[in-house]
Length: 218
Image (cartoon, rainbow, N blue to C red; front, side):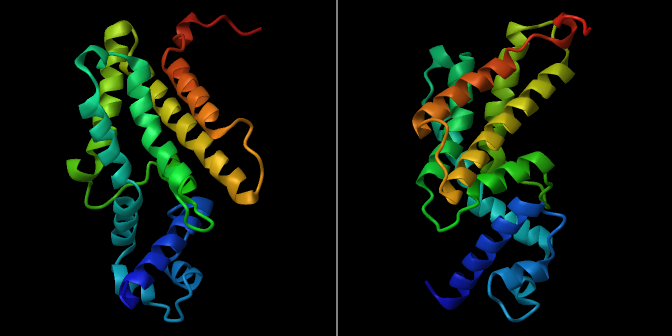
């Protein structure tokens, strides 16, 4: 790996950590450069140009592989299970869980960055095409279609809200697991059990009763 490639990698690592901790909008390019050990205040601009270019590069490096894995799992799903909500949720959860488990970079903030990105619904400019975001789009669209077929009277806004709750539940849980491991703390369950429970909980969120069916307060 040459010097330029190593420097870009250090900048991406620093951006991942700072964005995970504070959010994309609240971190300056100068702060990222300093955290990456760059003395030149314009180092990030030199390697990436603009903030949008840096965010896109980080997305492509960290998130695009997750979506490629989701497309792979979706293609492998038997036709008989294409309406199986549990199988579709597994396709959503498994790539991030695998990446978090297998990521051996020191002080990784991988899952925490993904959660922050999901939490903020951070825009990427220019918009991401199917090459990078196709996996998550296809999986969430398929989950939405299954919900619509199973609960035809559920308003579209409720379906969208359930999908959003599922996404935040998944990313927040794995981000918390990563933080615990980074701090040297124990997970509440062995990792495989934790992810199995997470998948079950995500299905439960999607199957939740509509708000109109909940008992009145008080």
